[in-house]
Length: 299
Ligand code: HMG
Ligand code: MG
Image (spheres, rainbow, N blue to C red):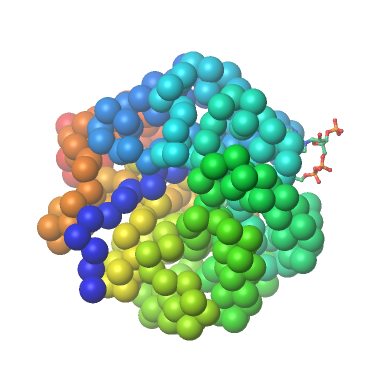
């Protein structure tokens, strides 16, 4: 059944901003994170420790963590880390929570990680091992769980196997990424069926839906009815992956909060404060928020 409480895993500062074309000052990013925290979002993914040439927009990770101080630290402030160099950078700053990010498909592993599907595991293994030895919390994202822009449909068995291999390394949480937003309600059920059979229960799973086809909330409903209680979302519906053509914004946090409120599920977010934050961020980015709830409530 449905969970009584949902943890919203806010990815706005990371997924939301990684694909922005213009330069966003680090101080604006820090203000964005602080406002999200003030609006009650307590799990916030702040940035990525990847080479600047791969994701220029997040090239200021050290500076951002410096500006945020204690607000960037602790188990509820994960950062993306693909390899040992990324882990070293995060550990030098005293961070204690990371997310590795694998691909269910060969093509996206090549495009996003410059590794084959098989090679990605060798890259992540020492990262997860050392992070766990240091007492860090580790999330494992799997991208292209519902479809891949180059390969089309992705076999559920291939997704489940990728998930299992990452979770076997000892990751604390899995996040099922619908990178290009092609998943639908029944497909979510089928994937969760397969994962359950593979021994991965709902309490270790989060969902990460992009809203390209307008299915993110419907897909979230499917996951909630299966007992999933960690839902990724991005304030104002920002987001997209620079290495996946046709990826648009994440499920908007405001749209998720509206739905959870209607279901009577606890979420901890102050919706007016969040709408105000997304409206402010939209002004910084120079375009209106994609979130329907922000559009309806801003004003
Ligand atoms: P590579 O070029 O093969 O890396 O990239 P390399 O190991 O060959 O190293 C090349 C150079 O980069 C070396 O420097 C390294 O030291 C340096 P040089 O010797 O040439 O001076 N380097 C680093 N510098 C800083 N930080 C590091 C780092 N690593 C190496 N961590 C790599 C391989 C994995 C690094 C690259 O492919 C990469 O960073 N990919 C990540 C791309 C990315 O961030 N994509 C977006 C996030 S994923 C996403 O959005 C999906 C998600 O939202 C879920 C969903 O929606 O599905 C999570
Ligand atoms: Mg994403």
